[in-house]
Length: 528
Image (cartoon, rainbow, N blue to C red; front, side, top):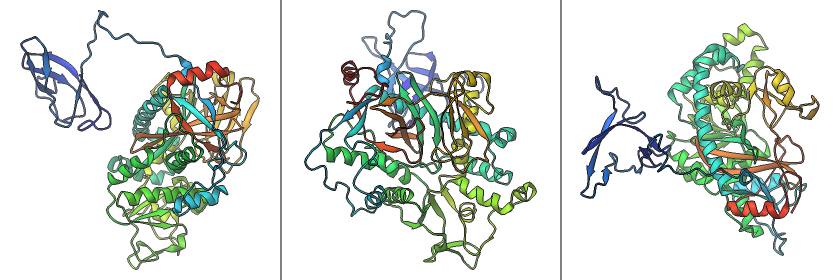
C-alpha cells in the first residue's frame, strides 16, 4: 500500500506491506509511523478499516485525516495486469545549449541595487550580469522535464544515503579516524548528531548529467554557496533577456529556505558570521533576507572585533547581545585549523585540548562555534558528510548504486586503468584536485592550500561539453529535500570557485530530443 507525500508523510510518502485482508479491515507491516513494539505474537503493525460495496469494490479508509492513500500494488508471477515499463531514451538526459536574441533594452540595469544582496552581487560581479565577461551573456542551458525529475529524485535519495553513511561512520572510531578530525572533537560531533540531527538548513550536490547517466561528485552541506544565483539571479536574468522558454528550476529555492528557517528551533537573535569576501557577502545577505522573511531577527558579524567576552565569560556582540544562534559562511574546517595551529601540530596537546575555553582577547571563530550555549547552522556533524572521506564509505555501503562513482582511499589498478580524480578529503572551491586519464596523463589539476590533507580517489566521469563549455549540474537541498537546480560552466573540465554560473531552463522532453535531432550530438562542443 502506498501513500503520497503530504500531511503525516510530508517528506517521503509511505509504503506498508499488507499481511492479511478481511472484509472489514486490513493488517499491515510498516516502519516509522507509531514507533512502538508490536503486540506479542502479532505479525502486523496496525489495522486499517475497510469496506466492500455492493458491486464488489474494496475501499480502505486512511487512518490519518491529513494523509492520502495512492493505492496498492501487487507482486505476482502473472504479469497480465502489470503496468508496462517503457525504456527511457538516454538522450533525454542530455543538456542542450540555448541563446537568447539580443534586445534593445539588454544593456539596462536589471538587478535591484536597492536590495542589499543584489547590490553586493553587482559590486562583486562588476555589473549587472550572471556570468563573467568571458561567457556569452546570451548563453543558457536547457534540460528536460525528465532530467529535472531525476535530479529531484537523486537529491532526495542521496541526502538520505549520506545521512545513513554519516551514522555508519559515527558508529566506528576506525572509520571516523579516516576523516582527520581532532579526536578531542569526536564526543561533541556525536552529541551534535544525536541531539540535533535535523538542524540542517541547506546543502548543495554537484553532479554530472548526460546520456551516460547521472553521477554525484560530492555533497557540500557545510557552508555551501551559489544559492542566490540559483534562487534569484538566474530568474531575473531570464526576465530581463526575455527568456521565456520552459521554466526556472530555482524559483522554489527561496521559499523553501524560508520554510526551513520557520521550522528551525531558532528562538532569539541569530548572528550571521561572514567570511569577509565579496561572494560570501552577497550569499549572507541573501540568506539574511530568507531568515527575516521567516520572522527571525539577525545581525551580521563580518569582523570578529565586533565580538567580546562579557564578565561571565560568554560571547556577546558589540551591542551586548549574547551569541546563542549562529549561521555561518565559514567552513567548520577553518575552526578546526585554528585548533591545529594553536597546538602547533603536537598530537598530545591536540588530544588534550579543552573546548570552549577563553584563549584570546577577541573571540575567534572556533571560540564562537564550539561554545556549549551556541547552536550553529550548519551543525558540527556536517563535517562528516561534507568531508570527501565519506565517498569511499558510500561506495562500500551501496556498491553499484546508479548515482555513485567508484571511490577509494587508495589508488587501485581499476582506477589507474580507467582514469581517476584525486581529491583532498577536505578542500574548497576545487582546490588541489588532479584529474588523470586512462593513459596516466594529467588532464587537469588545480593548486591550493590543502596539499597536506589525505586524499580519496574517485572514478573519472567527465562533465558533458555543452555549447563549447564543460557543464556541471548543481542541486540545492532545504532541510534535506530538493529545492532547486543550477549549472556552473567553464572552459576547463575542472569546475572551481571561479567558474561561472549561467541560467538553466527546464523544457519538455520532446523539445530536448528535437533540438538534438536538429543540431547534432551533444558533447561535441557545438554552439547554437
